[in-house]
Length: 93
Image 1 (cartoon, one colour):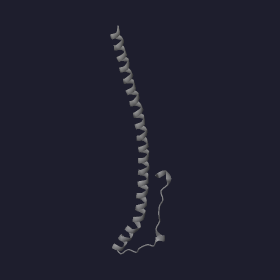
Image 2: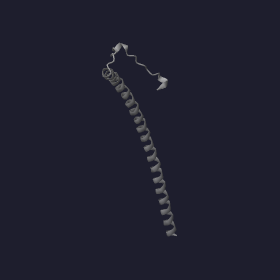
Image 3: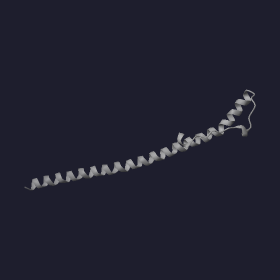
């Protein structure tokens, strides 16, 4: 009779350990999912900031490039007042 009780005890202990491992895995997977979501949000913010900086860089370089082309082909260089900047609408971004 003792042998059967001992077997039941080990079976119950094994079942408990398996349940504990399962719960631990579930908790860890949720924690990892939250971390991934935070990293994705941060990545998207960095991508937006990078695109804004690229646009600013293009705005800074474009007039200089126009000047170079104008000098190369002996065009009349327009004054800064004659430049027309076109802004994008918010819904097109």
